Amino acid sequence: MTAPIAASSSTPLERDARLVNARDHKIAPGEIAIGVIVGRTSEFFDFFVYAIASVLVFPALVFPFVDAVTGTLFSFAVFSLAFIVRPLGSAIFIEVDRNYGRGVKLTIALFLLGGSTMALAFLPGYGQVGMLAVWLLALFRIGQGVALGGTWDGLPSLLSLNVPEDRRGWYAMIPQLGAPLGLIVAGGLFAFFLSTLSQADFLSWGWRYPFFVAFAINVVALFARLRLVATPEFTRLFESRELQPAPFWETVRTEGRTIALGSFAPLASFALFHLVTVFPLSWVTLKSGEAPERFLIIEMIGAGVCVAAMLASGLIADRVGRRAVLGVSAVLIGVYSGFAPQLLDAGPLGETVYMMSGFVLLGLAFGQSSGVVNGNFSPQRRYTGAATVANMAWLIGAGFAPLVALGLASRFGLWSVGVYLASGVICTLAALGINKELGRAKG
Image (cartoon, rainbow, N blue to C red; front, side):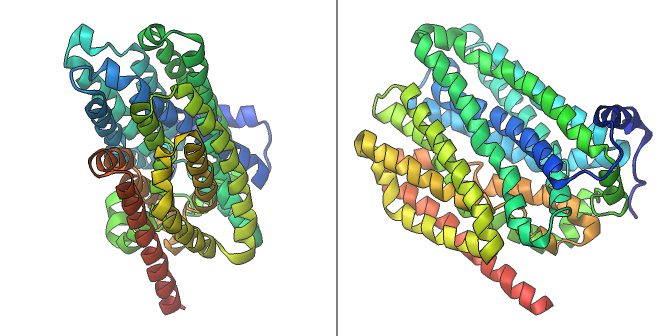
């Protein structure tokens, strides 16, 4: 049995959101898309603010007792904690959703996310409090991870259920736009402070400002998402069980095969995600001695290229199918893995070629990576299943990518990063192949 729908605790929040909306009609896909983009951009902004600080700040601030490479590896180990606890956060917040309503869940999750991110702005250094700085960094990162597990609002599912079948590739791409947009904003803030402040001032206080901004952005995103969650159309889908949260462990037990396939299907794009954003910034900063703001500008330009590639992926997917786009892009990523990582040691031109080609492939693959097998879930478990797949895919495909890539490259050379990326390609192709066979068997 499932818990009763809607709880009185969320009614005031949902009523306020409906008043903000001030309309009592079916929400168009375009309006849903705006809410999705705002929500995902805020999440990825938090993500990239922390990721950039993991390279440029935390090794010197929190881990000054080891060399720069080891300090960055320690920083990446803490970075991984959020991905480890995301499934736990998902389980906790699904129960909050079932018992108290989606408005309460989103409010708690986004304030926890914004609060954990803003708390990092007050993080003391190792020179001030010793090892307590390490524990505080880990605690705040865990807070971010638990919160991210609870920010799943069902809006991508609502979007996919409200668009024509021949446009699903285009609308599947829309939530993914939050990643490059979040990178552009976060990278721009850090590049500004790096270019206008001395190194001492940046490490003392300049890096803290982006973390303050994150809290304000999360508040805006909260109201943008509540506005849609409280609409009559969302309520109808919720009550028809299309967007009703099912018990977490029951979903894992009964839909385990679909969760596994959904988690492995996007591994090529998820591994590439960190290998063109977080890892190259660390490698270039540590090995080349280049000014990090220069490389951040390259990443911002690459993120713009990624947006264009994502838009193209939506158009292509509507013509040839999402599975075909994922499969072909995985093969192209496999080719890329054979030669591209070595370009990071080939000077500014090589770095630029690595980044731009990587962002093109990321846009094509990541643009269609969300929920590719979610149609396999039974309707009553689609909401919980989709949230679980998203969290597991990030854990398996991306959570340890910067740590593993920097560790391998430092020990064996950049060619080993290509081998690591190729392993994700194999997982993607295998999952897509198995899912296709299962589809034929069901047919």
